[in-house]
Image 1 (cartoon, rainbow, N blue to C red):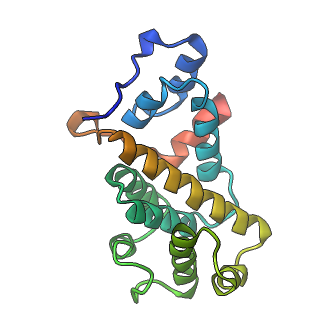
Image 2: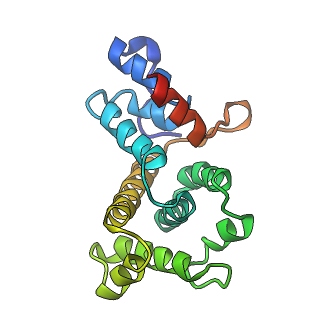
Length: 188
């Protein structure tokens, strides 16, 4: 059971209700509804990472799922395993992310992304070797996107775990779909 109560849409101001109407009906967003100061920027950055970044979406999701593994966050894994599938990451690779970057299923670029992810989470500042590894195939913008995605989703994992946000189950179970986020952003 969550450590804080989920927001009741009826108790929220109009601005927050409109923001929540754009988001999938998930417990993470129900929890954020009671933090009116941060919900809009939180959703804006997450949406930008998922829909507006230049980095290859498969590489992005490998990093995000690995960050969720490292945070031990089942909620985030539940969501981003699905997003990884949506963008074309194989089941074999999704499964191997639990074991780390050394799996033979990952190519050289994917291993570089995963080693970079692990090092960023462990050490805050990546080594020259890890940096140069991703810089050999990512441009300056994509490197920044990678760092921000890893940092953001590490934050999300810590948020979800610290507040013990409940994973939806049964008929409540929904997933964020990148295509739906893009569609709502274009209309909203």
